[in-house]
Structures are given as C-alpha cells and as structure tokens.
Image (cartoon, rainbow, N blue to C red; front, top):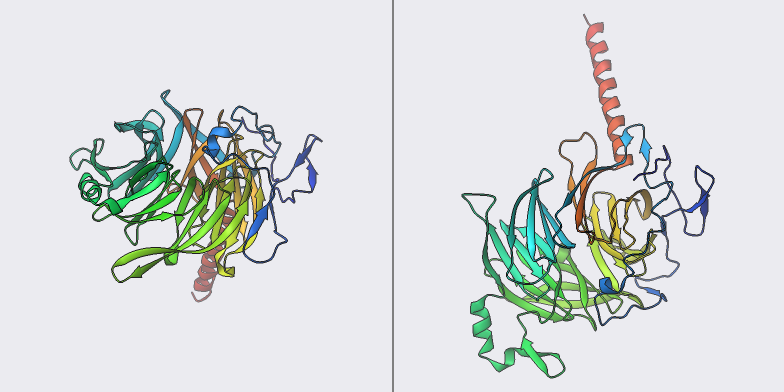
Length: 442
C-alpha cells in the first residue's frame, strides 16, 4: 500500500516539479503564500452548486492522482514516519463522524448507529431512533450526536457498566419545545411558506463544536444557521442566521471567537459577548469569499492558526497573531477537502481523493511529511490523539471513510522526534560530564 522513499522530505512550491526516485516527475506539495494584502482572500475557482451538500456532488469514484505517489510514505533514522495500525470495518454504512475519549473511539454512520471501539475491537454500540449521524462531540461525561434529521441527541454512559450508553435527552428539550411553541413570536421563516421554532434546526446538522471552558455547544446546519447551547440546562441561548447557504462547519476558539464556513463560499468570524446575562454573537469579518463551497474548518490547539478546506481541494489558513491575515494555501489534494484536524505542529487534511495529507507547520511554512493512502472512498472525518506509549512525538490518527471503514494510523512529527533525540543525547552527555567531575574529586 505504501511506496517508500527514505530520507525524502518534500518541500515544494505548486509551480515546481521534482523528480522521483524512479525518474518520473511528481508534483510536490507545500503551502503557497498569498500575494494579497489584508485579511481576506478571493478565489475564482469554479463554483459548486450550493443547493446541496458539497459532499453529494463530488466525484467519489475518481481515483486519486496521488495514489501512487513515490513520496506517499517516508522514513528517517528514527523509523517510519507513518504506519497503518489497523482497520475497523463493519458493513453497515458510510462513516460520517468520529470522536475519541481516552482509549475509546466513537464512530457514526448512515446506519443511525454509533459504534464504540476499544483496542481496535468493537466494545459497544447504541442506536438513535432516526437520522444519519453527522457529528459527535464528547464533553463532561456526555456524548452529543448531530443528525441528518436536524436533531441533537444526548447520551450518557451507565455508571454500572461502561459498555452501556443510555439516551438522556435531546437539544432542544421537549419541555423547551412545548414552551416555545405557545408564543407565535418564536416562529421564524425557514423556507418559502414554511416556518419553524427558532430554537431547533430545520435541516441536517452538519457540525458540532464544544467550548468546554464556557460549557457551550455550537451546532451548524444546512438551514443556514448556527445555534448556541448551554450544556448545564440544555437551553438554546441563540440562533444566528449566519450564511446565505448551508453552514458546513463551525469551530470555536479562545477569547470568544467562533468561525463558520458555508456552501456559499465564505468563512465568517463571530465574537461571543455577554450583554448582562444574555449571550450574543456578533459578526466581525469575512475571511474568505470564493466561488467554491467551504467544506471544513479547524483551529490549531494554540488558537493561532485557522484552517479552511474547500471543495476545490485547497486549504487556506489565517494567522490570529496578525489580525487574521491570510497566511497561505496548502495544495495537497485534487478533490474536495472534507475534513481537517490539527495537533501540536501537525495538520491533517482528508479528501474526496481518498488520501490524507500530513503537514508540519514551521511558522507559516507547511511541509507535507507524508500522504496516507489505503481508503477506497472519500475520507470524511478525522480524529487525532497523542500516542501515550510511544517515545517521541507520535500521534494516533483515526480516519473515517465512505468506504465504510475506519483506519488507524501512527504518525510521527519527524522534526519533533529529532529534537527529542538530541535532548536525550544532551542529557546523557551532561550526566557523563557530571560523573567525570565527581570522579576528579575522589
């Protein structure tokens, strides 16, 4: 499945080709810097129809042009950079969502089932009454699942048996729905000649994002809104009409910042503020305005970089420290980028071209360390955890695909491992010098 090219790190400009080991020419991947000033970026790529989910219109069966890339796997003196540990397969539906908690992996599919895996084996599972599982978030001992039917369901683990999950409620609660339905002012127009309560989504949930510090859950939907939920009492605090088309992604960051990406081709920035006891989100700026749909968003763990994946295969990013100035573009895929994940200095991009690119960030320079191949369908979701058992900076990466499988990878931050090795050598040398010094006084 892998093609090895020892000691080969790709540093590329999209306009520069490099020769592979077998003499064939391959296009290298790395970020290209925007020549535009300011904090917005406009792309003239062909537009995808915004009336449907961007995922529905991608040419899923197209073979990835990078499937046989001679640099899809690399190695160095410390061992292989990326390893496939195993695959989790249960022939019951496409994988649309992933979430991790400790040694447990939760997977959601279009079979309406949420499966729980432990040590690469099925540990448990539970089923919702209806609705494809589009998103999973775990926080405060609760599991939140977003569904195609526009509902958010809440689950708890049984204190007596960790393999048993019981549904504890939904967002909004039935009590809140009943109270809101009494007042005509709580109804808003969601489509022509159709109204709905503002506290519930009227179309599919596309994404969930948790601000654990504030106890707030964000949900985005194809109904063009994102909603704000207080976890402590399951109340809907606010509904924001955010975009002109389906909201495909929402991510929360530090300092009350919220980012939304839409099929209308825009990325918008919102700020959460308290007005007395009321939570309000105010529009700050538009980071991106392009013809093709925005399909995924991610913020790095420090909150300093915002990433945006699009249906044209590009990943734009912005720098918080520079007032969200446009930092560049990662050009690693030929088809839509469907999911993003960031961990430490690594960024992972999953695509409809069936591959996952692993990037390492140094400042604003992103270098593609490896390309993970093996899926037979579009990569729809990603989750990343630290590898607690490994020496060095290694990570466990879970990738869910429309080929009905989840693959588990072990990925190393090559630079980080070299730095750790150097530190270990320095510690050994320091210990040796200390020993010599002690001996000289005897």
